[in-house]
Each structure stands twice: as C-alpha cells, then as structure tokens.
Image (tube, rainbow, N blue to C red; front, side, top):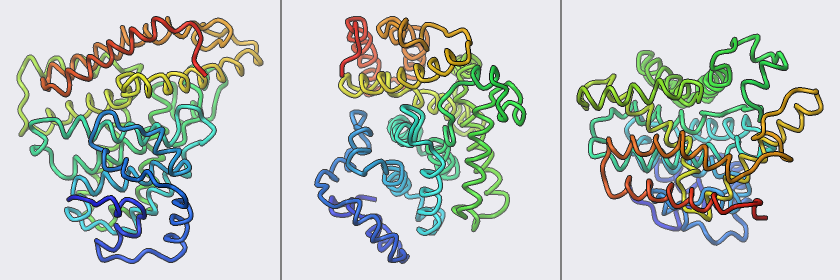
Length: 353
C-alpha cells in the first residue's frame, strides 16, 4: 500500500483510510506535535537503510516509535490482513512509548523504532519474504518495537550485583530479556491489538514475540549464530516454520545492532549514545565502590578500541553471516558500511561533540 507525502503528517489520515474514527483529543494532540514540522517526507524513506531515526525523533519531539510503528504495519498490509482496529493500534503504540525510559541515552523508544525499521529493511530484502506468514511478520514488528521496553539503562551484571528485584523475579539468566518480553506481552494484551484474533493465533503471535525478544540477549549470541550456520549447512527450507524462525531470530539480532552498520554520520551519533549510557552505569558503580570495567569508565574508556572491538568480534561477523545467507547488493553494501565505520572509529581519539 502506497502512502502520499500528505498522509505522513497525521495518524488521523491513516485512521480515515481504514474507516475508523480517532477521538478528537488524539487527533488534536498529534496535530499540535506537527506544528512547524516540514520534513515528514522522510518517512517515505522508511524502506531505505540510510533512514535516520534520530532525525525522525527530533521531528516528532521524541515520538518516532509511534509514527514508525504505524507506518510499518501499513507497509506490510497488516491492518487489512488482520482487520486491526486503529484505536487499539494507537493504544498499543502509546502504551509502548510510555513504558520506555526517555532518560536512557541509548535503550529508549528511539532505539526501538530504529531496530524495527532495520528489521523491515532486512526482511523486505529477502527473496523468500513471501514465505513468511502474516502472523510472523506482525509478531516480528511488534517484537522489534518492544524488544527493550522498560529497560532500566543498566546491564544484567549491574542488576545482579545490586540484587535488583528483576533478578529476584527472573533469575540471573536473560533477566532483562525476560522482563522486556513480559512487559511487551502485557501491553499487547492491555491494548487489545490482537484480542479479536482466535486464541490460537493470539498465542502464536505472543510466542513469536517472546522468542524474538529473547534472541536479543547478547549472552546467548553465539548460540543463535551457530543455529544459523547449521541451518545454512543443512539447507534452508522456506516452508519449514522452524527454519523461518531461525532466520527471524538472526534478522532481529542484526537489527538490534543496526547502529554499527548505518552511514557514518548516523553511526557516530549512536556510538556516542551507547557509550554515554555505559558511562552512566560506570558512574553509579563507582559510587557503590564496585569494580568498573574500562568500557564503562568514562575516564578510562578509549572509544576507538571499545567500538572497533565490538565491530570486529560481534557486528561484522554477524552481518557477514546474514549477507552469506541473503547475498544481495544490499547486504554487501551494509558490510561495506561496517568496514567504513570501523575505519572511522579507529581515527577517533575523543568523541565529537
């Protein structure tokens, strides 16, 4: 379904297209948000890898998850496929935004929107995208948008060291991902976005959402990489649901790290944000007299070493694996962007302002 530039200015236009009515306060609120904003045509580039979510966040005054999430559901014809109620979708996106912590430099709603947009690009580039069931695409978008919901801005080790209530509830294995998954599923149910589907379909969507969010746990990174490698050796069957799930997990992992593979002007901004979040955790650890690793110590961390190391050991091999599976000019361009970004990071002595 194609959208005109004028359609991008107000979710109320979307509502009209699906013969739903938005309440007056909702329309008014978002029209106020748009006052003086003239760059909405950028959302037309949502299928391009150089899409700048940080710019959209500035344009929408921090509401990029709302607009990007809505647009992605339209792009994949999911409103029509599932007869989604527009008001339930808006409720879900609003709830989701409210449950992200805006004070987190990196793990916030903007990062979530960026991951969802990247997932859209990666899946749309697959020659076998038509083999994915609509339920899988719906669940994938919901999972991407919600994969870090209610993130506390610190990592699992910090939560364990401080005996966080999240550790007491979820244990010390994938405790953040368990938390994100539980909150995501709760918000999906509360919003009613899929409540009109059969119970079987609801359960399947929620199970996929949980599965894909759990795949973002970096402590389990190698397991998912090895599963994908094994699948490529044995042969991918697009009609096999478990094979498709392995691919979706890897696509989610790549999307979660998409900031390392964006054009340098965007990549460097994300790099600054992730390091600032690490350093804030390190500041808290110092106050508590904990040992602080170099990457989390703003006085000791060398950005060039920290970020080139992450590219060398995690991001570059991961995107290369995806490119080996989906060998197109698009995926190879992404790999070249990562190489280019690595070269830039090597030259960084202090982070640019």
